[in-house]
Picture: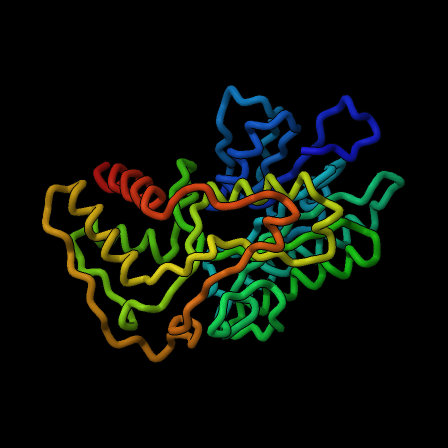
Length: 334
């Protein structure tokens, strides 16, 4: 990672906000392997691998407080913003506290850095956006050029935070880049970093011997990327602050994996591990509250980000599913 500090002999300070979460734990583990001063900040204590090159400072803080944000990012060369409300997109529809986390932390971050702006280069802020911010996706692969028409409160929150970051970048306060995430899955060892996404949900159902249910015929696609590959995208972004600053960049594998095929693979892998027959994969009627985006396929063209950074997902889908099944099976057996 390149350093923008005046003293080139001093390792850069990288603050990870939301370091104890699912993606945050993977990003923190990846950064721990680099010669940086790593500041892992979250509401819960973060777990950082020991014996790694990074000089690590683990802090707990309520980042909805501006004072806590100021302390968390003081002197940082780069900030990776992964904070999101623990209730996910569903909570955003009904819990007023969701906005305070999903948007308020970015408001505090930009205000703190605007107030404390000095002579050094503006700090790099890498934000975890969402590919779903565009709303109902088109029938073609999305590449980041689509207009944003968010269809859920969560995506409205994500877009609002991203716009705050772009405004602060245009004002010279920060160098901000938003990495819009695909459907991320996998397993991290950190306590409290459980994956609550669709893939992990289906694996847990299969481990419990329950059928895997789909709200459609299984041909709906999602762009699935393992959490370790996503973590490497954030690391890659730190090395290319200026080309990325001011934009939003899509991450994806570019395949578009049919969820029916994914579920059948999960059923097969779990059955092989448990020595039992595979659980069935069945279609059921969707609830009335199901958003329209659940029935539209998503394939992501991340060539823009790849061309700038050289990043690409490296873990094949089946290998990623095998790793996730193995990890969740061990946890299930405890």
